[in-house]
Length: 143
Image (cartoon, rainbow, N blue to C red; front, side):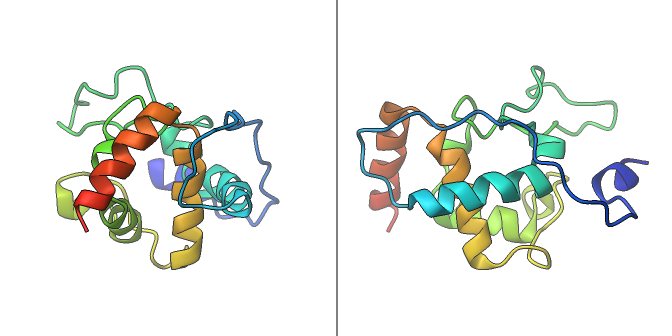
């Protein structure tokens, strides 16, 4: 049943829900405004069904379900996505969460590398400057 919700059989036009717009940032970021715009649309199409329209996921994302799996975490800066370098974020979207013990499907057959970067750009654009700066320092140290 979940499969049908995530992958509907019809080719009906996708309605992009109103999604929180990123705050103006005084911090220079790795992505462009165009990537954020594209990422917003891609997130709505491919990610919001599990991670929520505003990348906020569900309130009890830290509690396992009946199968012992954790629900999708928030990507808006309120969970642990900012602990991961860009390479891990990219790989998790591309290959899915199964190799890491999760249940998220991979999107390599649905999203190009550029589209994956756009999705990451959108949800990172929701992160407060201080959080983004902490992530960026870790990102530079991991290279």
